[in-house]
Length: 151
Image (tube, rainbow, N blue to C red; front, side):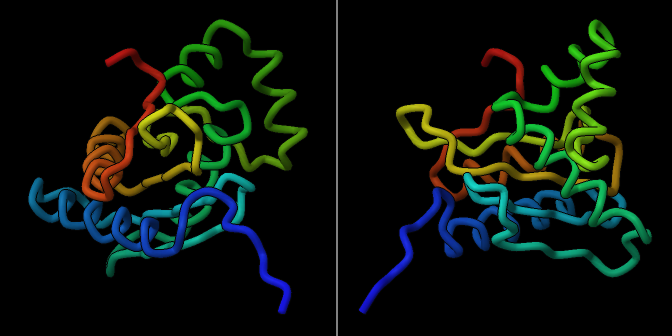
């Protein structure tokens, strides 16, 4: 029987990350969050939207994760590049069909050796707080976050 290879982030890892990220948001008393987990191939592994999360939060969270994964850079570095290289980031947005959102809250998920397994995007509160929740979720799964800033 033929089987598909795992493309980075597993469903179990994605679910752990999403649940832990939402728990961190509740702990910090943040606005309702939406969390999207993408595997290394850019396919959605998991998504949860808290009650009260506004209408376009899933698309924004997806855009944060997709942008990070598209260039292999965390959201903080994408935000810096968006300021410094507006033409390039506009072109990236066009190429990506508007799906790349270059702000904090898009965090790469890596293994211990730095291999990118996927990305997490969170939207709902301010971007810096969204990122805090993504990092907490990724660490809860025993994986390494890459926000685009050196640790």
